[in-house]
Image: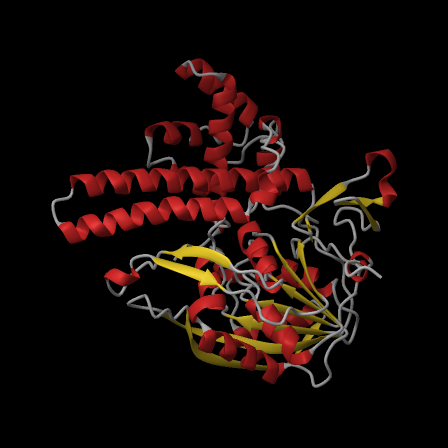
Length: 456
């Protein structure tokens, strides 16, 4: 038996639930005939996201944009260094310029499997339903990779121990960890309880492809730029992230969105959510509906992290008492829970760090419920160019800040579609219709997502 066969036996098409079959370097849905959906593999990791080609284009653009941004930063720092008269400051800027350029090359090398074919301009509009939320960038949670594999040994061990104290006595046969980031907690939990299989999912290619290498025992070189460096030495750090000495058996990684189950229903004995449920764009009840699909009745859900919900609607920012009550409505009984205040990203290279109150609980699934209806993060009028844009308060508020965006956002009156707005914008300001269309999509998408996400 190949080492990937146990994983393939669990994978399902997130759109149809159909069985996936491996053909060369891809998985295909056997139930769709001539229109079968193809899911590629990147560095051996299945890319089982709904509309995988659209999601791929989204991340390709994010990676390319970041590479260009880092190059521009490097050039600006080099120019600042050449104009600087203080030798120490000039040396610091030169170091930063060199490191930013090197960091861009390191990111490109790690994410190279995704960049073998360039993004198609024709797919840009079609990618909208499958784009990651605006706050999910290539370097979202970048600091976690250094915490996981360089300087965070105490923090990593503390998180592992908190979770193990809450875990059931008997280890699971199959464990799913959602949102693994750089993969250290998955590695530590798997080694501690030795299930027959552990699967880790995430949507971030930089973190997942880095985790894959490290868990295979391969080293990675990465530059770190502490936000608030302690001293000159800490301004930029050249790290060699060491791959694990003991490569774990039966650990698999999958690109998957927790809200769209890419596995056989009720396939896992445990589902683990570290620092996940409060940062998702989905509302907690919909998240609970999704988690319910992964477990049979009697299976366990283990949670670890804060309850700082990223929702602007205060009704959706639940306290622990409300979480317990809401969970019961969606098929989970929280059997035990505990909170603790712990340091978060306490780097020896930063002058400050956060203290977070985290909650850890063990919940058992008591009943099965219907899966969530939510499959994407954007409203219908932003995906269908012919639908009328509603007269929303958040659009009216944003319209005060910028003359052009104020004019365009002011057109949202519940009657005009983006298509009609694009024609008006092109005619009035004598711009290309395609450029007007792109401007409107970006402007209204930003307005919508800002209205849904609380900033810190």
